[in-house]
Amino acid sequence: MSDHPLIRLAGVDRIYTRGNEELHVLNGLDLDIQKGEFVALMGPSGCGKSTILNLMGAIDRPNAGQVLFDGEDLSEMNEAERASWRARNVGFIFQAYNLMPVLTAVQNVLLPLQLTPLPRAKRRAQAELALQIVGLSERMNHYPNQLSGGQEQRVAIARAIATDPRVLLADEPTGDLDAKSAAAILDLLQELNRQNGQTIVMVTHDPKAAERAHRVIQLDKGRVVGGHAA
Amino acid sequence: MNIPWRLVLAHTKRRWLRSTLTIVSVFMTILIFGILRSFIVGIETSVAEASSTRLVSASALSLFAHLPKRLEGEIAQLPGVEAVTHWTWFGGVYIDSSPDHLWGRFGVDVPSMRKVYGPDLILDDEVWKRFEENRTSCIIGADLAKDEKLKLGDRVKIVGNLFPGTVDVEIVGIYQSKVRSFDQKTMFMHWDYMNELSKSAGGRQDIVSTFTMLLKDPGQAGGLAKSIDTNYASSSNRTLTQTEKMFQAQFASMWGNLPLFFSILGGIVIVACLMVTANTMMLNARERVQEVGILKTLGFTPGSVSTMALVEGLLLCLVGGALAMAVVRSFDGKMMMFTILTVPWRTIAEGLAIAAGLGLLSGFIPALLTHKLTILDAIRRRA
Ligand SMILES: Nc1ncnc2c1ncn2[C@@H]1O[C@H](COP(=O)(O)OP(=O)(O)OP(=O)(O)O)[C@@H](O)[C@H]1O
Ligand SMILES: [Mg+2]
Image (tube, rainbow over the protein chains, first blue to last red):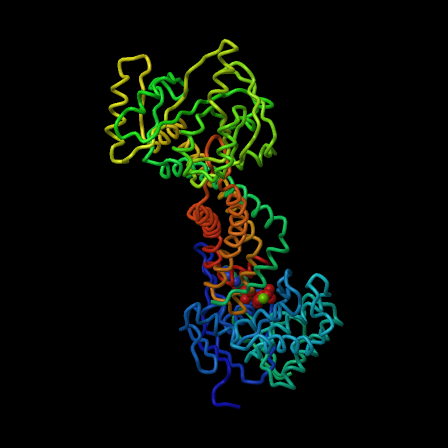
């Protein structure tokens, strides 16, 4: 393990303002994610899990404190820099899959690859490989509405891993799935972590899902209230 | 900049009806613009290209009043005049009185017509000769032949109204024009023949609509015009003599404010179209909030995502505009309301520029909103 964590949240405040009201979601939060870890974030609804994930993925900024990725302070980058940083370093997986309905599976996976310097043929090969890893080689040319929920989430995972990001951020990836599909998705994430050393931070409500992680972080009201190795 | 072109294309295909309607509305708008514009340009061009080595005398009373034929001899005597010829508008009804059949038809004197206008026309020597020798013959323009499906040897019958009697003449020649100011939709027959016809039916006789003088030196046009007009100033045959260019300008001014009216009309249509396309683009943008969120999350920059919003409208508008201008271009040289529709590349560029403007303007607000939309807002709006 290197001398500093892959992701470090140090003294992070996140305050949302709604009209005159200030909502202190995170208050001086400290949190480290090591390279190669599979971490589950758990806690009651509204406690700030998604907020943490958004900060780690540079789609949100803290009001105070630092979000360091491999030692680099994300909040010092401008919008365009953060965008290309995301393209290079992060793969997002959402509860609602978030695929482009007008694109086929392989076209969806190709989207983030378009932002890489890879040549065209290599991008295509990479997209096909990603779909093969998630077990959807046969469905490459299907549109999202021709796929089951579990398959859609697999496409979303393929899209997230296609660029070989340094971290996968998954926000309730099994939240919309039946038990069987959910288990299959978790198998897949676990395999990615074990075989490729993929760092994964996953928000979940499901204790069964959390069991797959190395470490479970319990949150409440924007604070770490407990953590244990799974 | 990284633009997900495949996504742009996929949207256009998925929303094919919306895309098609946008293309069609821009198509119609640019078509209307193009036709109105080519009419206005046609008027301007006919003035700009008209000859200034020819002088035209008409009655000072109006464009449709007549002059006595006998003035011809007097005018021919004036110094500086190389040749004189005369045209007389016959009017009448060919087939029926619909505007389709109301092309120009004039009685002329063939030898002097050839001398004065011959250089502007493409017509073989032997055809000129045949026309000259046959009193009941005529020549017609190539466009007229095409529109009325007339060919050599056909007979043209026109029932007179300004002049009584029915002319019945054989087509012995079909001319093409070398200059735009001389249209290809006119028929010329012998003035002698139509004059005889009118005379024997008790109608008007020995009158002409205009005299055209070929000048030895275009520099003398002003002085000569003045001397003709002062010559007849006190008579009932007051003349107005102008170069052909000025005559064309006067004819063009007959349209009065029509060009202005057309411009306003065109402007209104363009603004109406802008409303339609802008509304469509807003609709698209509203449907794509989540998508913008995804693209930005994946790492597409605000610049490229908003450019994408701009590009889609721009492409649709340009397709519509290009199709319309292709159609408008095919109208080049056609007659509409006595005017040769004229479509230079400048008009085509204007049409495309307006189409592009429609696309950019209608996509501007969606692009701005897209640029500003934060990922958090995009994701939250889905929930
Ligand atoms: N953009 C925002 N503007 C204002 N308030 C927000 C915003 N995003 C989140 N919040 C609020 O911040 C709090 C934490 O939200 P967050 O989404 O991080 O919770 P969560 O732990 O992911 O909850 P859940 O399990 O329901 O997804 C909630 O009360 C939420 O309403
Ligand atoms: Mg959440």
